[in-house]
Amino acid sequence: MFQIIYKVTSPGVIEEFLESVDLDKEHTLVKVDYMAICKADIRYFLGKREQSVLNHKYPLAPIHEAVGHIVKDPTGKYQPGDKVILIPNSVEQKWLDEFENERCKREDLGNNYAIHSTFRSSTTDGFLKPFYIAEPNLLVKYDGKIPANLAVFSELLSVAVAGLRRINFKETNHVAIFGDGILAYITYIVFQALHPDTKLTVYGIDTNKLAMFKGVETKTYEQYKGEKYDTMIEIVGGLYSGDAINKMIDWATVGADLILMGVSEEKVPLNTRLVLEKGLSLKGVTRSDIKDFEVVAKLLERKEVQDKLKPMIISENTIGSVNDIYRCYEEDINNKTIIGKNIMKW
Image (tube, rainbow, N blue to C red; front, side):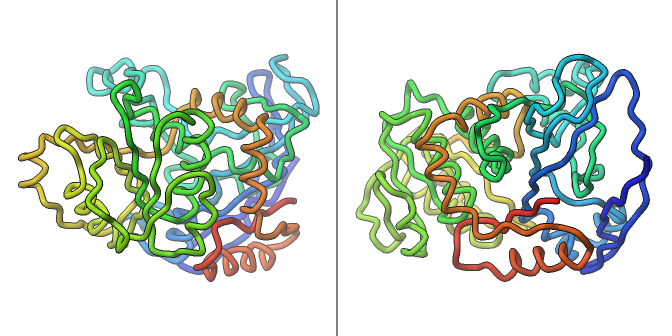
């Protein structure tokens, strides 16, 4: 059969393409149910990357946050109707066996760091289409009782899980998150679920957003009173990430770990002298591994996690045409004040 797949072809332009949907005995047919737009999707849609990068991206189908259900699985791994999370990243085993990727096998890293790994809506087409032919090992089943409009946050949750994997909680007493946006809030959810006994403080600039971080200490930067932290997580991104990271460097104890999760398209200056003097470790986090999604599938079963995700659904939008997609992009682009997403469904 054939279906329409939607691709960004130039800044601000989304076009329809005809795609063949051919199922063989080694793949699984998935109906894509719910999708969410990421900031990376918005950057490609607006052309907010270097032109040399964009020249290699377009045309590109966006969306790497998606869930669906099984229509048919010739491999026998899944049953029709099973609800699944769509895994956006993959890498062939032959690349993992290369010397250059040996460190990707470490528990705290993962194969998403492999040089030849691919990622939906970045290095290959994303999930903005009604049906998806998937490799069975790039799907994670989740409990069918979990609302799909909450499960669509799985990719963001998995990134938070990946970020917390970089922390040695046996040696951690006090963690500070810098940022009050959607990924900071998601990381707070995962942190409270997995490490409820570790003290957490969240720093941000928007008091309305900080009010959503319930059950933990929240502060604006101006309310800092000289506290020291052994582990800090930057989830600010953009040009302001430099300011946040330099505050982290200033407020760090000797030997502290600084986890960097925010994305900036510009280089930001850092106080490297103080990094050296304090013996600090900077650890970068990008994306996640399938084992993180497996953790997320279990986290989604917990009522407290679902309750904290529910306020993040700003709206649900049925997609039937390219105009509907434009409208959803516009809503997410213009949202500067609310922590959440405008969810899309077919």
